[in-house]
Structures are given as structure tokens and as C-alpha cells.
Length: 157
Length: 380
Image 1 (cartoon, rainbow over the protein chains, first blue to last red):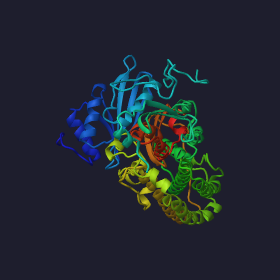
Image 2: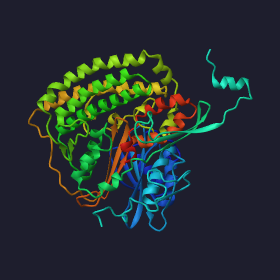
Image 3: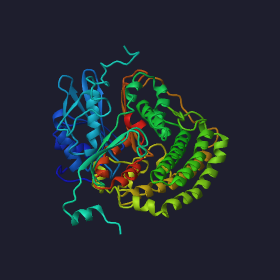
């Protein structure tokens, strides 16, 4: 398929083929359901992949940027929507604990701005290139990341 | 003759004003909850704005990691008191997806009816708030009066008015009651007439129209890129509704229309919500016909296991305010490993700067009222 063309309503199979061809197998599409595509992306490629699905596959809207503490590593999950066929693509990026950096995508979708700030303050994941990466929900004086598994609630110790 | 401030300035270059930051909130009549909107004013014009949230942050998602799956249903109600049914519904849907559990058809229809009642009562609450924001207490009183009928329906359905605790993982808590069955059609018929009176109050009032028409304008591209969802987005010409375009439960078997307007101002956002009220009435009537056709003895709940197998699940639905999404990471135990809520208002309020910059300070309450603030779900 032509990886430079613009598709307004790509089907689930087309998205899988296009991602495989464009990124030469580095983007691993793990599962396909009706109107859902799940993929894992290497950390270095996330900005390129997001630019590509925004510009060429018409994924115009970002639903969420989610942080998960998997103990062995940190994880960022993106849910991105296409408004023409109701398709959602789920991108999963694994980040090592000792270097929690990932490229910010809020220059592509401005709506991702606050989701990235929230993920930063709760998990300590740093989004490089974010315009204003400051704490949003928790006080500025916090020096810990409360949603990491190392932060125990009462009754969890 | 009233002269515009900008006209005066154009005539006399000497007249200048200093820019000034005004902090609206967290306790302010316009804010409808605890949040702050800092606006920079040049005379009456808003030149910059910054929303501040987080006063109600209580670590909801972290609290869930410490509780068994069944105990989170009433907690999901408390995310937003006006849209409690949709949040507990969304939570149950997400866990069912992780379990691979089918829900009985009757329960799916009951959930649709409950969601639409919730949508109507939430929109009426919003319309009442718009009435007070614009100084018309009659709109407020009439909306709250009509809302009581829908609250009574909730009492007939599940015994509670606001935090209903009704959906269950695998179905709903109880079947529809006889009183609910009797009253729901009467309520819909009464409301479809009563809503016209409220609309007449607003559409015949020049105060409402001059404040709403032509304020808070965004283009379609801006609106989508900023992540605005729900009625605010459909007032900007985006023809997308999760109920129709990414259907969940039985919305694909029910016929309804999605109102879309292209003006992109506060008035079109208001019109979309009012039209949604009529559409919700239609959905309730049609779904109730299906429930009656299914019959009284059909199952309304399947048993669900307490432990969820390891894996992830994502579900989304059309909340009264926009797109709600939950993402669950399960590890095979009886408690979620991570549960994330995407609240529509969290993203909508982050777009308040482009919404209010360029308008007058007096228009700010109306522009922000059109996204229907709810802080419980914003801060979580």
C-alpha cells in the first residue's frame, strides 16, 4: 500500500499493513478487534508514529495518555481516535525505570497537554519537548510520585 | 449611543489601560465547583487565561488499587454526582470486557434506559445552571422541577436519587419495577411538552441570545485538536457520537439522531444539548418497548467471577458531557492493578484559554457554562 497517501477511513487491516510497511516491522500490531487496533511502539519512534497516524491516517483526536507502573519498567499508553470511522488505536510504549523520558506529543494534539502533565506528576515520566511540564492536580511541594507502586497506601504495607 | 471600548481607543490614542489579572475562583458564582480561572484583562477584553484545577484531587485511581472489583461500583458513582449512572456503567463494562463476559440482552436495554435518564437529568442540571449564570431564576426553577420527575424515576428503578449504585458486573442489580414501568412513559410524555416552555423562556429572551450568539467561537479543527468532546464538540460541526459511531450495549439496535450544528458558538452548543434531550426521550421510549417485548422472566444479571484474568481492557462511552474512557490493567487477582479514568471535562477545561481569549469578561461565565463543569470527575 502507498504509505504516503492520506486515508480518511482506514480499516483495521489497512492500519496494520500501513504501520508495518511504514516502520518496517518496528511497530508491532499485537491485536485487532472491531474498530480497535493495539500496537506496541519502541520509545524512539513514538513521535514519528503519532505524526504519521495524525497526518496520513486521520486520527484527529487524542483520548488519553495513561501511565502505568509495571514495577520492572514504566509504561505509557496512548488512545487515539479517528472521528470518521470510530476506530481507536492503542499505542503502548515501555520506558526503563532509570531513564523515564519519552517524546511529548502535545505539539501534534494540543489536547494531550494536560494528560501528559498528569502522567508526569503521578508517575514521574518526563515528556521531552512539553511546553509546560508542571504539576497540575497535586501541590507543587510534592517530591514523590504518588501513583507509583513504591508509594504505599495505608493498609498496603 | 453605546460606544465600544475599542472604538474609543481607536479615536484617542492617549487612552490606554494597564493589563490586569483577575482570579475567578475557587469560590465564585460562575465556577460551579472548586476551580479557578485566571483571566488577564485589557479593559473588558480577555487577553490571556489559565485554568487551575486540583482542589478536589483525592487519588481515586490509587484508591481503587486497594479495593476488590465489586467495591468500586459505588465509588464510580461518586466520580460525578450528575452522571453517576454512566460512570458505574462504564466501570462495569470495562471489567466485563476484561472478563470476556456477555451481559443479558435485557440488562443491556435497562442500562441504555438508565443512561438516558441520567443524560436528561444531567442536561437539566446544566440548563438550570445556565439560567442562574445569566440571571434568569425561572429557568433554574423550572429545570429543577422537571428534573425531580426523572429523579423520582431513578427512585422507582433502584431506590436512590443521585448516587444510584445500580449497574453490576454482569448485568444490573434488579429488574425494572412495576412502578417504573408505569411511570416512565408518562414522564417522557410530560417532559416533551414541558421542555418547550423552558425553551420558550430562553429563545424569547434577548439577554440569553445576545450573550450566547457569537461568543466562544472555535473552528472545527481547533475543537478536535484541543480534545473537546461531547455536545460542545457537536456544536462545532464534528459529526461524531460514540453511541452511533462506536456503539456499545444495544445502541446499534435503537434508532435515534445525533444533532450537529456548525456555528461553533455558545448558542449552537446550547441547541445541541436541548436537541439531545428530545432524542434521549425517543431512546427511552424505544428501549422500553424492547424491554417489555423481552418479557418479565428474562435474566437481567449473570454471575461474574471475583478475580479478573491478567490483561488490559479499554472501554469508552458517551457521557452526558463527552467521551468517558476507562482503562484497566488486571493482574489475575481480585483487585485492579491500575484503573484509569478519562474524564471529558478534564480535557474540555484545559481548552478554556482558546475558548475565552478575545471575548468580554461578562461573556466568560456563559462560555464556560457551555462545557458543563463537574469537578468530581475532573480532579478524581
